Amino acid sequence: MLSLNIQENIDLRHFNTFGIHAKARFFITVRSLEELRILLQEPQWQALPRFILGGGSNILFTRDYEGLVIKNEIMGITRFHEDDNYVCLKVGAGENWHEFVLYCVAQGYGGIENLSLIPGTVGAAPIQNIGAYGAEIKDVFQELEAVGIADGVIQQFDNQKCEFGYRNSIFKSSHKNQFIIGNVTLRLSKNPIFNTSYGAIQTVLQDMKIKELTLKSVSDAVMHIRRSKLPDPKMIGNAGSFFKNPIILENQFIELQKKYPHIPHFSEGSPDLIKVPAGWLIEQCGWKGKRLGEVGVYDKQALVIVNYGSGTGADIQELARQIQASVFERFAVRLIPEVVMV
Image (tube, rainbow, N blue to C red; front, side, top):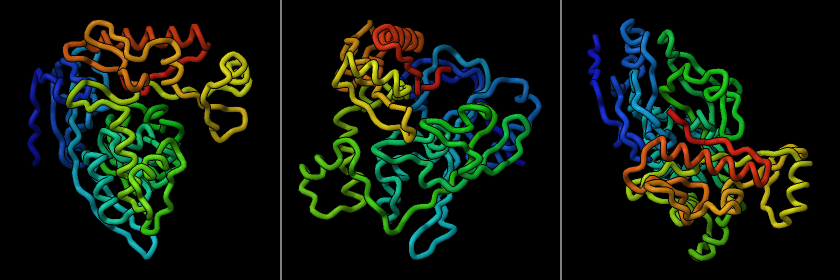
């Protein structure tokens, strides 16, 4: 019988990349699906609110958490199917995402090299369908195993059941806060097709004098770009991109384009939907590099809100609210946080 080591009144500062002080009334680290299943079936914890913590890179604690925080540290990488063209890997949800990407690059497994240096854990990746530089996890996703929070029952979800969308999945909509992901299975290519058309990847590759593309060179280029734009959470508290890039109707975009001819934009797969960079909208409103007390907007990327040291979750939440209000007042576009506020 597994024993559950429940701790009390734990400071979560070192468990979130904003570096916010907030206490968990109860806290436990789980390292296997079985341990997680037993925990969720314990009657004494079923009455409490429960929050799942991975790498803490997409979370803003705005107050103490008066429930049970479950730190997911289910580890392991298993190769269970392989042929001449593809390999399938089952990965523990607690594995660090970026370290897993580097592992795949070193092994010659392609498909996620454009997702290098994204913070967080493997288990968090499908929840918001992480993406960057023209790639998304749904492109390589096979299935996942998750445990129902209400009953401790293990269920499987394939690509279709996850209902992936832009930074979205069923786990952020109809199944929000209903499951804890235990492992994720990805299908990666042994003969990768390199995607270097997005952003500044090609320019960086040229600067690096790369003559022959490899998984490592693409990964290195992506890391170079990200490091030039995003602050290291170990140096200054942040959660990366705070807002999603808004998707608006084409007729609204045409009206905006009349007033702002140089507004950047991207197609969103449908002819009547246009994606506009949230960072550009925020910067046009004068927020880039602006500081309010102990929090502010990063001076190299307006999409990033930072904690200079002693800011609170409420401070960051208020700054985000002011940014949303100013963008809506000027552009009539609503910014939706990508960061989960607790």
